[in-house]
Length: 387
Image 1: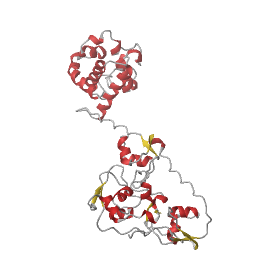
Image 2 (image 1 turned 180 degrees about the vertical axis):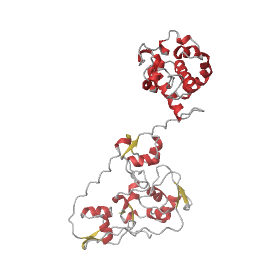
Image 3 (image 1 turned 90 degrees about the vertical axis):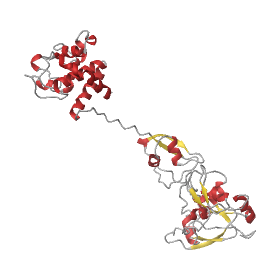
Image 4 (image 1 turned 45 degrees about the vertical axis):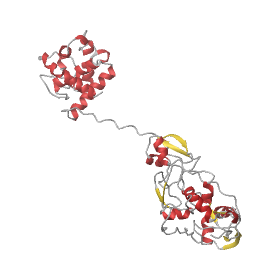
């Protein structure tokens, strides 16, 4: 460009000098537009070479660093933001991230075309551009949309404006004060665990990593998309961390019914405050008597998980077949559903000093008292697996 010739830099480039956004480029309308600057602000080729380095050579590629924006990168190497976007197939809404490689030289992709406004208004006058103007500020001053001004002047989002240039102002509206920006919809309440105020250089991925949550969950909590822009000062809802999935418990050789009954015996024992050894004795007794199954048959009138007999006062047949009730009856104590009619483990004086077999036999009164010994070690392993 010849010295002294009018030119304009992108408004987003100018704005980048006063603050570093947390995204690829600023996309608010006054940041997307190109700011008109005085002719004295023109850069000479020597200045551009100084920006690129002592040799004046422009590197073919640039690796994005934390806090970078397309605007800042373009300014650093004396390029136009729109050219860097085009070279890399990016748009004004594109998000860049640390480690990404950007092209600075080569054939540019096809230039972005301006969105065409439907049925633009008929022209009602002209406006002469002054230093510092942007398309957005001109549109706001005349109570118009940016799209309508672009369409009336056959301009695109990447078009350059300069002081002294005349713009056609479409008719129909009187100047009006700029409307307040619409607030972003609130984050989904059930998943939010707090908020975070965006700082310069932040990205959604860095915020998610800092709080130990996924990028997708942060986007969802704030109703954002992958191309959404964040900016310093904005509040981001932080979703709650997902609870770790419960470990799948299994016991070798147990099927679903046996595992369910073993869990029941352990759970009730914990609720009643039974020591671990007492719970292990209950597990061994149930395995010996029923194979850890809630049977509807047995020796004489014996039924259920512990093969308790209605004729011996353990309850009705239906009660004895209730696995929860039968387990509480085996443990006995203050929660014994049979009261003092039967004697559970906790009701036996000195049970804790007895051997595994002696304690189980004291409750079950089996014809085979020594049979419980074989389950002492397995029962301890089952209890350890079900903690």
